[in-house]
Amino acid sequence: ETGVTQSPTHLIKTRGQQVTLRCSSQSGHNTVSWYQQALGQGPQFIFQYYREEENGRGNFPPRFSGLQFPNYSSELNVNALELDDSALYLCASSLRDNPYEQYFGPGTRLTVT
Amino acid sequence: AQTVTQSQPEMSVQEAETVTLSCTYDTSENNYYLFWYKQPPSRQMILVIRQEAYKQQNATENRFSVNFQKAAKSFSLKISDSQLGDTAMYFCAFMRNSGTYKYIFGTGTRLKVLA
Image 1 (tube, rainbow over the protein chains, first blue to last red):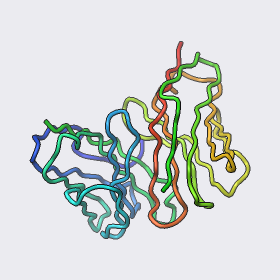
Image 2 (image 1 turned 90 degrees about the vertical axis):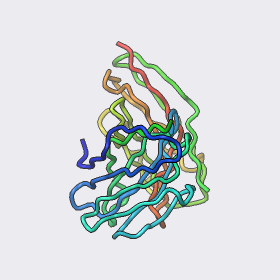
Image 3 (image 1 turned 45 degrees about the horizontal axis):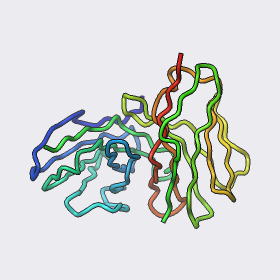
Image 4 (image 1 turned 180 degrees about the vertical axis):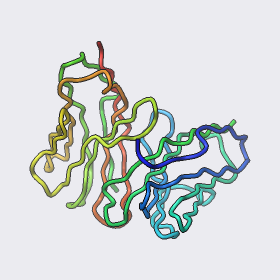
C-alpha cells in the first residue's frame, strides 16, 4: 500500500448537493493530483496542486474546485452535483522534482442519486 | 492532444502462461513517459512498469516487460508466468515530460488469470 489516504471511502449524495473529498499525501510529497474514474473508464485528470496553488487543470467545469493545505493534504470540492459526477475519485501524490512517480490513494466512491 | 488506446477490453490467460496487453498512443511530443498501472478490485492504482521515451531499451520488472516501439507509438505489456494475483484491470498511461505532469490513461484491459 502507498502512504496516500483518502476519505471517505464511499458516500452517497443527492443531485444539487455539494461534496468535499479529502486526500492525505504520502509523507514529504508536495504535489497532489486528482482524477475522476467513471465506471468502466480510465481515470481523467481534474487538476493538480503544488504549494497550495493550482498547477494545471483538465476539462472539468468550475464547480470542481480544490485546495491544498500547508501540510500538502488536499480537498476536492464539487458543487451542484449531477448524476454524471458519480465516479471513483482518486488522488495521487508526488514530489515536484520527481513527477514520474505518483502514488495513488484507494479512492472515494461517490454516488449521486 | 495526446490519446491512449487500449483495444482489448478483456483478456484471459491460464495460470503460468504468458499474456501480452496492447497499447497505442498518439502524440507529437518527443520527450515523454509511458506507464502500465494495475487496478485490482481494491481500486488502488499500482505502478507495474515505467518506460522513458528517450531510452531505447525496453523496461523490465521481474515477470513484467514491455515492448516499446517509438516510431509505431506502441507500448505493449508482457506478463510471464501469470499468477492468480495478476487478475486486475490494467491501464496504459502517457505523461509528457513538461508542463503539468499528468497522466493520460487508456480505457483499460480487464485481465483474468484462470486456475
